[in-house]
Amino acid sequence: MSDLLSVENVSVEFGSSAVVSEVSFSLATGEVLAVVGESGSGKTVTAMSLLGLLPSSASVSGKAVLAGRDLYSLSPAELREVRGNEAGMVFQEPMSALNPVFTIGSQIVEAVRVHRSCTRAEARARALELLRLVGLPEERFKAFPHEMSGGQLQRVVIAIAVANEPSLLIADEPTTALDVTVQAEILGLLRDLRDRLGVAILLITHDMGVVAELADRVVVMNAGRVVETGAVRDVFQAPREEYTRTLLDSVVSLDSRVLPARPAPEPVLRLSDVSVSYGGFRAVSDVSLEIGRGEVLGLVGESGSGKSSIAGAITGLVRYTGRLTVAGQEASALRRADRGRIGLVFQDPQSSLNPRATIAKSVAQPLVLHTSLRGKDLAAKVDSLLDAVQLASSLRDRYPHELSGGQRQRVGIARAIALDPDLLIADEPTSALDVTVQARVLDLFRSLQRDLRFACLFISHDLAVVQHLADRVAVLHEGRIVEEGASVFAAPQDPYTQRLLASALTVSV
Image (cartoon, rainbow, N blue to C red):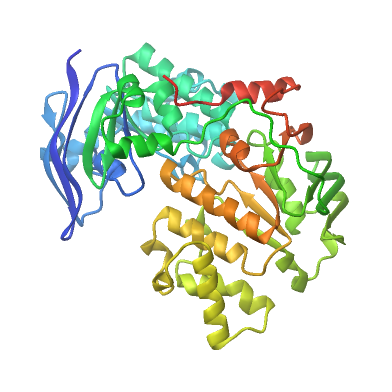
């Protein structure tokens, strides 16, 4: 196969800081090349540089030849012709990539008309064809982004990216934060597009399971440099570099073991026939479960299954019917002073931390609201919390944007445990982290849970992570618990659970 894209000695600098140094790789027509590495390794910066999507402060050198033309030598007008025409881009977060005030159909039509001389009727017909291509019903043409699920939105972004039949598709973390069944569908769609349209795919990801499932070759980056490249099978089975081995060893894998049995502890959280409705739609139906002190219950299920609605009911953010108690108190009756019994770790620490507050202020916030600690006593408590999550106290005066993703998540955990909660709710706390950072955060989480003995509701779409942490697992489907226990992964009984497990990716090749 001839090379469609050839990247030669590409370097990127921001001011005097080199972010990417002399990166080289090639991509053939119809091939999938995965670029992997930790956060900050330079993989996304390299991909963004190809289409001129870096800020003006970036300085790029080297060559990136696409179908015979050096992308770095093109004028802004010529580069606009390339974007969306010869090269399409699939972004990590589809909700941010789509305009919330326009319908899905109008945004696909716009992508078509920008590069094609056609009537609005012809563009509309092409948009409907694209919806069918990515497996969405034509009725979605008139829908707005907020009316669709994450998986459906990612299909729309892919439809826009391939609207003008590009020869190159750049996919930046296209399945991050999607549940396992939707992830499998998106990967199947990308594979189908490659086979049917012959499009070459440059895949940026931290998910080694996605690499094993989709890619032909892999490029491993570390600190802005390529440290290893080769066929996926060769690199995964016999990595030459220590860094590559570290990445692969950090992958949390799903297996069929039974979770270890332990005595039933004193219940901290108890739900009895809890239901949650939004207008006429019932999101949660008659859910009953318990979590004991020192126990981790993993809650899994597809997007829209009701996981976040249950978390909202527990924290008092969503109205519910039935009985729900935390440490013996009805959740709906908890006063503000009692809210400290529940800690929260969010999926995205970047958006959950105040960008204008220092790390110390963010961690201190619950202490200021719920305790009388002030001055030196407050500062000492904040330092002890930072130490507990293995963050140096020298970081206390930094702002969230000055920390890595893993460091920000540690700040979120420190804030969540500040009041020594009876119950901790962790909502997808590692889904956006690369494998090595994820492994460290999971080790930290397990250590804190063992020492502080809080009950934990761990919500995740990553079944391997849940198996790694949880004592028991509850499977939620269409608002109902369909299966629960310690043997869910070893001997799933419900067809839905079996389908979830069958959709989970592994790094075997």
